[in-house]
Every structure is written in structure tokens, then in C-alpha cells.
Length: 192
Length: 238
Image: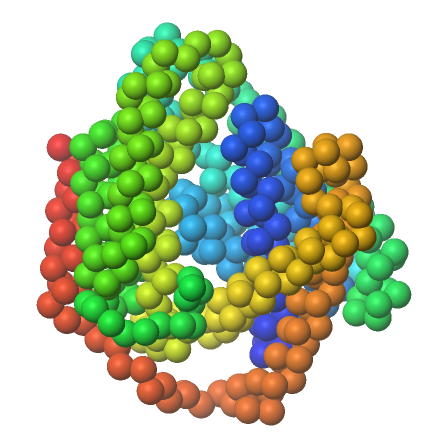
């Protein structure tokens, strides 16, 4: 494993802050209730744009992993579950491995890897399933038990798989949009 | 307003960054494992606002207590009377944010009262690898820049007649995303390249241990708050 240089680390920081800000802005859309279930896919799509530009600067294993760790720490600092840090590390390493297998150049591998990487945020949604009882009890306080049951009927156990698929697909779509943006803008501006 | 890491006026009693981090973890674990406890939620809010008061941020403390109080009133007196599917959805989002408030406030306290150098110094003390410290300090350095940039890009979009409003967001979301993100990414990335050049001339890549003039250390207030935090953590098992 080649050692990361200061320049690489600064790149991780720069794209980390961009990814985080975009992610958080889209996360605010959760306040519009209709969009609530679709937020993960929107986040993954929007994150694809800075991520594709980031990939053009990656040549060594470890940078994508670090990126995942940094953004999950940031998300943890600003109000998501500590589980995010765990999923952040796991899926960033997996995404890194997928993209590395294409030597950071093969676009198909990059798209799939972006999808896998996008799963880092999954820990933020995990409380819906992992801490189901405590979550349900919390809602029951506000509305009564039957309301809580109605809501949780909307989020059955198997929907965890639907969420995973949604996020991966979102990441792949994001990679395609990101590549289009890269061609349209960044190459012309000379920073890709 | 100095709401970003990097500006820290040391007034009042402020905890060591390591204590803040530990408390942040404790609060996060408590909130997510005890979402249903009202008592715990109230205790945590007072716990965090007391930190704001000690660090002489009275305004933040009062505002957050007021928000919490009005939130509680809404949840107790208004929400139970609402019915229908939409009310449930709105309600569940509101309740979620209500429960997350202690974490968000603690995160705000961490960011408001920690300078970048203090942060780096304390991270080095707990032997966090450089690979994590450097990107994180770059992130904190660029937060204010990103906020500034976003503001001016939104102004520019208004001047060009493609303002960032609700109608445009609904009718052409992808275009809006593009107009907002591309200039932002270009300017931040350029700034980052300049930053790399700047730190390399100051030989950041020298492998020797750097010195740091920040004085950090544990004092009585750290021990007190760690003790209180652990006591709250014990509440999980009752």
C-alpha cells in the first residue's frame, strides 16, 4: 500500500467537506414529509457529483476509505447515530476495493464502487430497524400505540433490503450524472 | 458570529476537546438507545445547556432551551389532536428531531468552543493518526468558505433570473443542482489546491513531531462532566 501524501490528505478533506455539505443540505429535505422515504436515494445521487471529481484525483488505495471515515465522523458530530461511523468504515473500504479492482480508471467499476460507497450513510437509517423497539415506544408516547403500529407497518423488516438497493442504485445514478458533469464542466475548466 | 472551529475566544469554563468528544459519544449512545424516555431527554438538554452557560454563551443556552420548551408544548398539546396520514408523517419527523436535539446541541458546543489548533493538539495526544487529523482540519478550515460561497452563488443565481426558489426546485431540480454545485465545487477545489501548495511550503510533509502552542489538559470541570456523563450512561441500565 503506497503511503498517502499530504496532498492526498488535503484532497480528502476538500472533497469531504463538499460531500458533507451537499449531503446535509439534501438531508434537510427530510423535513418535507413526502420526501422522507426518498432521501437516501437523493443523497446518493447528489453525492455522486463531487465523488466523481474526487475519483479523478485518486490513485492509491486508502483515499476513498479515508473519505468515508471523515464524512461519517462529521455526520456523527452533527447528529446522526454512532452506527454511521461503523457502516462508514465498512462500506468505504468495500467501495475502495471495488474501484481499486478497476485501477481507479474503469468507469463500470467506479459506478458500482460509488454505489457501494454510498451505503456508508446507511448507519444513519439503521435505528429504524436495529433500535425498533425504542423507536416505536417513542412514537407511541406521542400518538398512542395504534399510530405507532400504523407507521411501522409502512416500514416492515424487509424494507431494509429496499433501502440498501435504493441507496446503491442512487449511487450508480449519481456516478453517471457526475461523469456527465465532469465532461461538461470540469474538463473545460481544467480541474478534472 | 464565530460558529466555526478555528475561532475560539477562551472565556468561561471550557472543557478539554477530548472530554467534549467523549461526552458527544455518550450522549449519542444514550439518545439512540433510550429514544422513549422523556426524563432522559430533559436531563440531557439541561446537561448540554449547562455547558453553554459555563462557557458564557448565554444566548445560545436560552435560545435552545426556548426551542426545546416550545417543541415540548407542540408535541404535548397540538400533535395529539392532529389526525390523518400526513400528520403522522410530519409528527414522526418532528419527534425524531426533538429527540436528536441533545446530540445536535452537543455537536454545536463542540464546534463553537474548539479551535482548530486545540483540536489538532488533543487528537495528537490520543494518537489519532495523521491521516485522519489532517483531512478533518481541512474540513473545519473550509466550512466557513463553503457557507460564504453558497451565499454568493445563490445571489448570482438571483441576478441571472434563475433564483433558488421553490418553483424552480420542483420544476427543474437537476438544473438547480448543477447551477449551484458546479461553481461551488470549482471554487472550493481551487482553494484546496492553493492550500496544498501553502502547507507544502511550510513543510507539513516533514515526518517529525510538530510542536503546538495550545495548552490543553484535564481540569476539575472535565472530571465533573465525565462523572455526570457516566452517571447518565448508567441510567440506560435502569
